[in-house]
Image 1 (cartoon, rainbow, N blue to C red):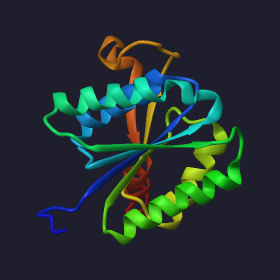
Image 2 (cartoon, rainbow, N blue to C red):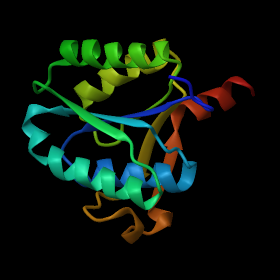
Image 3 (tube, one colour):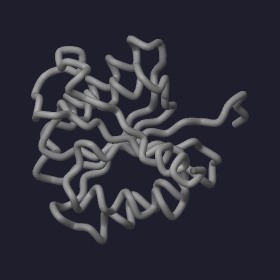
Length: 165
Protein backbone atom coordinates (compact mmCIF):
# COMPACT_ATOMS: atom_id res chain seq x y z
CA UNK A 1 0.00 0.00 0.00
CA UNK A 2 1.50 3.34 -1.04
CA UNK A 3 0.44 6.74 0.25
CA UNK A 4 1.35 10.28 -0.73
CA UNK A 5 1.69 11.09 2.96
CA UNK A 6 2.46 9.19 6.10
CA UNK A 7 -0.50 7.37 7.57
CA UNK A 8 -1.75 8.86 10.83
CA UNK A 9 -2.96 6.90 13.83
CA UNK A 10 -4.73 8.23 16.92
CA UNK A 11 -4.84 6.23 20.14
CA UNK A 12 -7.10 7.28 23.00
CA UNK A 13 -7.79 5.90 26.46
CA UNK A 14 -11.32 5.63 27.77
CA UNK A 15 -11.73 6.29 31.47
CA UNK A 16 -14.62 7.75 33.44
CA UNK A 17 -15.66 10.39 30.92
CA UNK A 18 -16.90 9.86 27.38
CA UNK A 19 -16.86 13.65 26.98
CA UNK A 20 -13.12 13.74 27.67
CA UNK A 21 -12.53 11.34 24.74
CA UNK A 22 -14.77 13.22 22.32
CA UNK A 23 -13.75 16.72 23.40
CA UNK A 24 -10.04 16.05 23.08
CA UNK A 25 -10.55 14.43 19.69
CA UNK A 26 -12.57 17.45 18.54
CA UNK A 27 -9.87 19.83 19.86
CA UNK A 28 -7.19 17.84 17.98
CA UNK A 29 -9.21 18.09 14.76
CA UNK A 30 -9.88 21.82 15.14
CA UNK A 31 -6.65 23.08 16.67
CA UNK A 32 -4.03 20.70 15.25
CA UNK A 33 -5.68 19.60 11.98
CA UNK A 34 -4.61 16.06 12.85
CA UNK A 35 -6.89 13.82 10.78
CA UNK A 36 -6.10 10.16 11.51
CA UNK A 37 -6.53 7.26 9.12
CA UNK A 38 -6.99 4.91 12.07
CA UNK A 39 -8.27 5.37 15.61
CA UNK A 40 -7.80 2.86 18.40
CA UNK A 41 -9.54 3.14 21.75
CA UNK A 42 -8.22 1.35 24.84
CA UNK A 43 -10.85 1.00 27.56
CA UNK A 44 -10.87 -0.54 30.98
CA UNK A 45 -13.70 -3.06 31.48
CA UNK A 46 -15.60 -0.86 33.94
CA UNK A 47 -15.94 1.90 31.33
CA UNK A 48 -16.34 -0.18 28.18
CA UNK A 49 -20.13 0.31 28.21
CA UNK A 50 -19.56 3.73 26.62
CA UNK A 51 -17.52 2.37 23.70
CA UNK A 52 -20.29 2.23 21.11
CA UNK A 53 -21.44 5.80 21.67
CA UNK A 54 -17.84 7.04 21.66
CA UNK A 55 -17.10 5.23 18.40
CA UNK A 56 -20.23 6.75 16.89
CA UNK A 57 -19.28 10.21 18.16
CA UNK A 58 -15.78 9.91 16.68
CA UNK A 59 -17.29 8.77 13.37
CA UNK A 60 -19.64 11.76 13.28
CA UNK A 61 -16.86 14.23 14.14
CA UNK A 62 -14.54 12.73 11.52
CA UNK A 63 -17.23 12.86 8.83
CA UNK A 64 -17.87 16.53 9.67
CA UNK A 65 -14.22 17.14 8.79
CA UNK A 66 -14.52 15.11 5.58
CA UNK A 67 -12.77 11.83 6.35
CA UNK A 68 -13.58 8.31 7.57
CA UNK A 69 -10.96 6.63 9.75
CA UNK A 70 -10.98 2.97 10.68
CA UNK A 71 -11.97 2.73 14.36
CA UNK A 72 -11.14 -0.22 16.61
CA UNK A 73 -10.97 -0.87 20.34
CA UNK A 74 -9.37 -3.08 22.96
CA UNK A 75 -10.79 -3.75 26.42
CA UNK A 76 -8.31 -4.17 29.26
CA UNK A 77 -9.15 -5.49 32.73
CA UNK A 78 -9.36 -2.71 35.32
CA UNK A 79 -5.99 -1.63 36.69
CA UNK A 80 -4.13 -4.24 34.60
CA UNK A 81 -1.03 -2.17 33.96
CA UNK A 82 1.09 -5.06 32.62
CA UNK A 83 -1.45 -6.08 29.95
CA UNK A 84 -2.03 -2.43 29.05
CA UNK A 85 1.71 -1.81 28.54
CA UNK A 86 1.95 -4.94 26.41
CA UNK A 87 -1.13 -4.21 24.24
CA UNK A 88 -0.49 -0.49 23.78
CA UNK A 89 3.23 -1.12 23.18
CA UNK A 90 2.51 -3.80 20.56
CA UNK A 91 0.09 -1.52 18.72
CA UNK A 92 2.46 1.45 18.77
CA UNK A 93 5.39 -0.69 17.62
CA UNK A 94 3.32 -2.13 14.77
CA UNK A 95 2.19 1.36 13.69
CA UNK A 96 5.74 2.73 13.83
CA UNK A 97 6.98 -0.25 11.76
CA UNK A 98 4.38 0.78 9.17
CA UNK A 99 5.93 4.29 9.34
CA UNK A 100 2.75 5.79 10.78
CA UNK A 101 2.64 9.15 12.47
CA UNK A 102 1.22 8.23 15.91
CA UNK A 103 -0.63 10.38 18.42
CA UNK A 104 -1.82 9.30 21.86
CA UNK A 105 -4.47 11.17 23.82
CA UNK A 106 -3.96 10.68 27.56
CA UNK A 107 -6.72 13.08 28.69
CA UNK A 108 -9.53 10.63 29.50
CA UNK A 109 -7.48 7.68 30.74
CA UNK A 110 -7.08 6.54 34.31
CA UNK A 111 -3.56 6.32 35.69
CA UNK A 112 -2.82 2.65 34.83
CA UNK A 113 -3.70 3.19 31.15
CA UNK A 114 -1.99 6.59 30.95
CA UNK A 115 1.19 5.18 32.48
CA UNK A 116 1.04 2.23 30.11
CA UNK A 117 0.63 4.56 27.12
CA UNK A 118 3.47 6.89 28.10
CA UNK A 119 6.08 4.12 28.17
CA UNK A 120 5.88 3.35 24.41
CA UNK A 121 5.24 7.04 23.66
CA UNK A 122 8.63 7.98 25.05
CA UNK A 123 10.48 4.79 24.10
CA UNK A 124 9.30 4.84 20.46
CA UNK A 125 9.32 8.65 20.15
CA UNK A 126 5.73 9.24 19.16
CA UNK A 127 4.90 12.38 17.26
CA UNK A 128 2.17 13.57 19.66
CA UNK A 129 0.99 13.05 23.22
CA UNK A 130 -2.17 15.14 23.54
CA UNK A 131 -3.75 16.34 26.77
CA UNK A 132 -6.78 18.63 26.99
CA UNK A 133 -6.37 20.64 30.19
CA UNK A 134 -9.78 21.84 31.39
CA UNK A 135 -10.05 24.09 34.44
CA UNK A 136 -13.17 22.35 35.79
CA UNK A 137 -14.64 18.95 35.04
CA UNK A 138 -17.03 19.62 32.17
CA UNK A 139 -19.57 17.03 31.03
CA UNK A 140 -20.56 18.86 27.89
CA UNK A 141 -19.35 19.31 24.31
CA UNK A 142 -16.03 21.01 23.54
CA UNK A 143 -17.59 24.03 21.84
CA UNK A 144 -19.85 24.66 24.85
CA UNK A 145 -16.86 25.02 27.19
CA UNK A 146 -15.34 28.51 27.11
CA UNK A 147 -11.99 28.35 25.29
CA UNK A 148 -10.42 30.32 28.15
CA UNK A 149 -11.18 27.30 30.39
CA UNK A 150 -9.39 24.72 28.25
CA UNK A 151 -6.03 24.28 26.58
CA UNK A 152 -4.94 21.52 24.20
CA UNK A 153 -1.35 20.56 24.94
CA UNK A 154 1.02 18.36 22.96
CA UNK A 155 3.63 17.15 25.42
CA UNK A 156 5.92 15.79 22.69
CA UNK A 157 5.90 19.14 20.91
CA UNK A 158 6.56 20.95 24.21
CA UNK A 159 9.40 18.53 25.09
CA UNK A 160 10.96 19.19 21.68
CA UNK A 161 10.85 22.93 22.24
CA UNK A 162 12.30 22.56 25.75
CA UNK A 163 15.16 20.48 24.32
CA UNK A 164 15.98 23.24 21.83
CA UNK A 165 16.21 26.01 24.42
